[in-house]
Each structure stands twice: as structure tokens, then as C-alpha cells.
Image 1 (cartoon, helix red, strand yellow):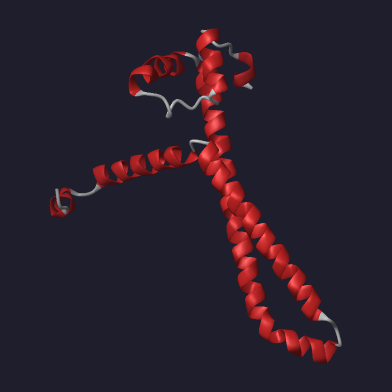
Image 2 (spheres, rainbow, N blue to C red; image 1 turned 180 degrees about the vertical axis):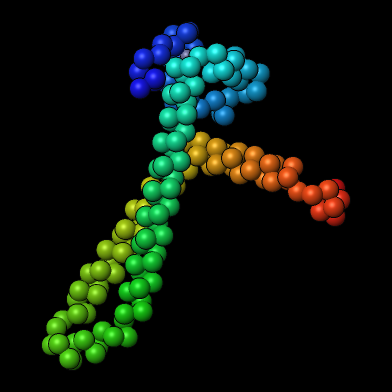
Length: 155
Ligand SMILES: [Zn+2]
């Protein structure tokens, strides 16, 4: 809602940021300062930045889940294989064809989801963004650690 109503305070900078999908992690630290300042000042652009980063994370989560799903499906199919012969004799069904079809579909799905995940990792700042969140969490945890434990850690 607020995203549509707010307006960018500097169209030129705003358009540049939009063309980068509001990801400034790829540019040099000196150049980054102006854009960071604009993101701090401009509600429109900072909202857009949050939106795009959550989109990246969503894509990352979905493609990772797809990879896990197909790995799981293939693992399940591997377990079913010994039952293949039983089914064939008991039900007089050609389970074997179906099994091979499902297995090929599982392999194809795994390949596609791995490619999709690789594209997300390459084309979006999701890895550095998630890494940043992880290191912030680690820092917070460390601050909360009792002094006795902190002194045990190697410097
Ligand atoms: Zn702006």
C-alpha cells in the first residue's frame, strides 16, 4: 500500500536503483555511499528494496524446497524398487514402466530445480543477503552470551 503511494525523492537515483533491483552490494563502497544515503532518505526506494530482497529470499526458498522435494521423491522411488517385482506378480500390472517414468520425471525435476536454484543464486543478491542476516544473528547471539562463556572463546 505505502509502496504505491510514496514517491521517490530523487527520480534519477531512484531509476538507477530500480535498474539494479535496489541491489547495491555489487558496486564499490565509495560509490555505494550516495545510494545508501538515498535509501535511508527515500521511503519509496527503501520499501522497494525490502520488497525485492524478500522476493529474492522467496525464490531461494522455493527453489531449494523444489530441489529437496525431488531428492526426496527419488529416494522414495529407490526404496520402492525392491517392491517392483512383487507388484508385478501380485497385481499383474506393469509397474516397471510407471516406475521408470516416475524416475525420469524425478531426475528431470531435480535438474530443473537445481538450475533454477543456481540462477537465483547467481542473479540475485540472496546469498549475500542471507549471509548478512546470518552474521547479524550470530553477532546478536554473541552479545547475549554470558561473559564466562565469552572468555572461553579463542580470540
Ligand atoms: Zn528514491
